[in-house]
Image 1 (tube, each protein chain N blue to C red):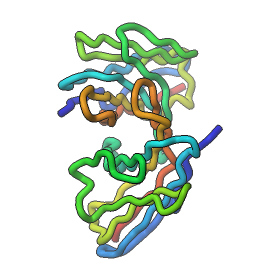
Image 2 (image 1 turned 135 degrees about the vertical axis):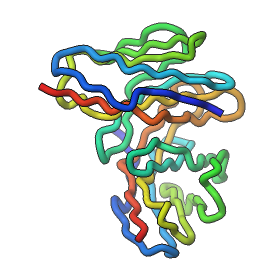
Image 3 (image 1 turned 135 degrees about the horizontal axis):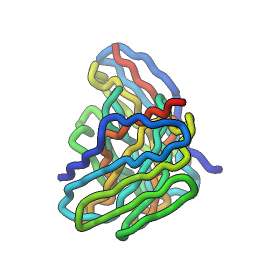
Length: 115
Length: 111
């Protein structure tokens, strides 16, 4: 079964450092997403991406965050200067479309720990 | 905005039936999803409702009442592996197609 893959599975970084989280969405999917989940809290939407541009973003996705599709397969989330409160599990997801029963398929997540 | 409410935690016995409720208030409605999330893992899709009524899929069923802003997930013949968080997610109508997740219900199945 096709899957979304994410790397790294766990990253530990110092506050103020830049972090890049990588994702390979399902190959025939057109819409890509980043969500995050702080430990013990709900899954929160960050950003969606379609046709090489951001289609929607939440209030969480401020200037410290950026996304990119550098090639035909990877989809990355960059945090420019990490803060303690960025510590969370970051999930990448993809869908073939957006209407109806288009279901988010999530990757296994990248756990970010900011010290 | 959206407000999605689920019980925080439920416990049940192996072999039993459990119903997990979700209520929501949205400015519009364009579908409700249930996901299962085991600790430390990604959410995985369970069911989708957009019309009123019951959707059955093996041991799991999901019900929707749009007029009441209410859904439930019914799990039958509970197994220990069903211990997980169950996330209700609602998609608004209008410009945004992004589902908003509730806090999830942690289900503990004991022998």
